[in-house]
Image (cartoon, rainbow, N blue to C red):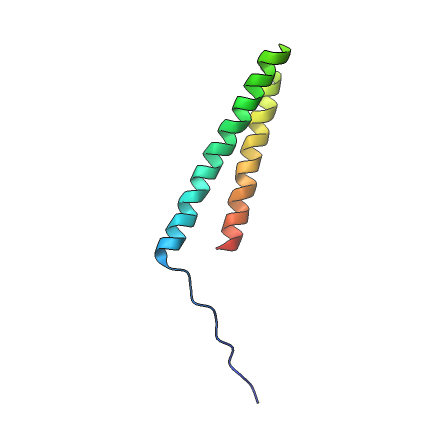
Length: 74
């Protein structure tokens, strides 16, 4: 005998909108943190703008990785 498995209910529209807004905030924050870390290290070591560009790139990559993780969950 086949049993019908109940599917879990879809998340509410509010929860979906909250997840979508979270993605934008994560991208901005990770980019800013990477930029700030690179700027601070450049000032410390006198290597401007090499470390700033490296950490900015890493921050942007981290933001997009979180974007893909969040989209995968939705």
